[in-house]
Length: 112
Length: 113
Image (tube, rainbow over all chains, first blue to last red; front, top):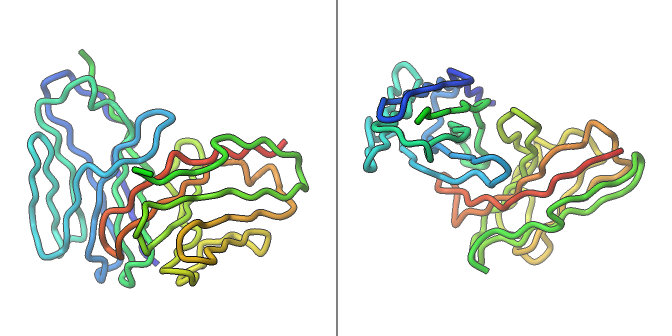
């Protein structure tokens, strides 16, 4: 099955700086890659996603890039704010679309 | 309801007991997923339903775990002879189809003592 690896496990940035989280995947047939944000004690919530026919997608301060050849995708958060502090999970869908394989998460802390 | 609802929110049970965890998906969502999340880890896939049938149960750790979705809406995850290692947050998610956004519930925190 798919194997998704995520780096770094923890990340601290100053407010206003950018944050980048990187993920790699193993199954070249995977075609959907969502990113979830999970605040302490709360449910994961989708913040952005990308499909394999697109190389980049942007939504205000958040962007995701996908390199299908290298099998990696990245989350970019610009102008970080304290409320961006949370755990972020990347995921890849199996080639059957039956399940998502999640990375181990990145704990982001934005220092005011 | 507006979102995925899971009950109970917390469950403490003794080792060896049987538990049922309930998930009410978003109305009209045909896809339903169960995941398990341990502290500091990403969600781990357990089982996927498309309608009433379990289309993929490859993530169930052993035969103590079972899930049903008899009418294609509400799902119940059943754990027999619970063990301390089963302690985790059990997350349910639903989606209007495959390879599209999955909406998660708040989870059930299961503690086996």
